[in-house]
Image (tube, rainbow, N blue to C red):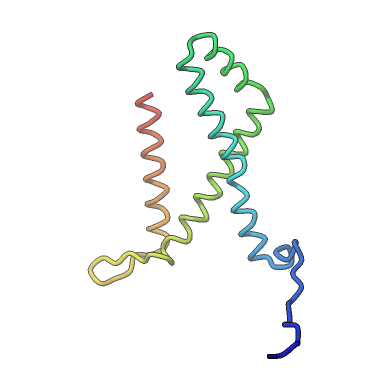
Length: 127
């Protein structure tokens, strides 16, 4: 047995700031923070809907606060950014083949956005 200490490379907490790839990854992953706020707001909204008209009116008043509106706009922007990065990775992660030929990447990405648009339109018409 040796009494030598093993080499342990120093790792700063901000190591990811030095590399553009990791910075982009951290920004992408940080988009979940406004989405957490949005999800909590919706959960409280459902709870206030169950409690009655007064609680529902209070929740609507809270949601009309400019800070809450800004956070919800940030959540929307974050979710769209997250979706765009996910959709752009999709053809590389899971190439789709039809009749032995791989579909063009643009077709796959645009079809995903078309599905998002169709589902959103369906929900808007339904509600």
